[in-house]
Amino acid sequence: MLIIAAVSSAAQLSFAQERLAQGAAGRIDKTLYTTYNLGALVQVNWVVCGSTQNTAGCYGAGSLFPFGRIGALLEGEPQTDLTTNTVTRAIYVLDVASGSSKDGVVLSVYTKTDQITPDFDFVNVTFDRTISLPLLGGLSAKASMGANEKFLFLGTDQSPFGIELNKRDFTFSQVGVFFPPINVTDVTVDNYGYVTMTFGPFFSGPSGFIVFEPNGSQTSEGGGANFMLGTRQAVLPPNLP
Image (cartoon, rainbow, N blue to C red; front, side):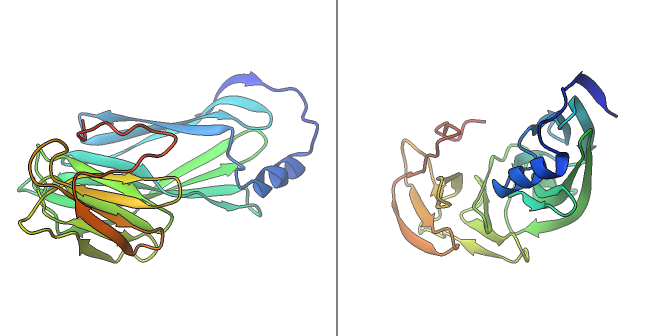
């Protein structure tokens, strides 16, 4: 349902010209945003707001459910189609309390599509697939998830290895088995697509880390609870909820 907050004055450029100009910068949806909130960690709700060429307000809302316990959420890289004025991206929901035992770990993938016109953003979120991961979860498990352009990196503090998952074909492999085993505590990403998976406590006890290149290959590893920083979101050690 459209909730109009304001109507803009006539644009200097035609809608087609404006969208082409924005598309050249790769962001035809740059005046729109999505906020999320959680319902008791078993449901995630979303709302899309912002502005188009002629209107401002909120353009769509919905919910994704049910989950055993949501451990982590992430949006995928946007893909723009200028011929249809659409932007498509994935939404990844990591459930750490799946199944009757409440300790299964399942990644649910949704596809969010924004079709943008001068007056509206037609938003559609559809279910794509679920992927059962060989990780141990639980109602008290803490999850970690990070990504670069090509891969997702996932783990829980109940499993001594993480998962590297290809975002295109959804194949995955186990990564980072230390001896003696150390459970995953965090996944952090820098602005260039390098990813660090951290194992063990940040302050005391055995710990280790593995660094992955943007192409997914492991480039280094070592002892210590090393992590990465970006320029847009703070790391909260030690993986505070």
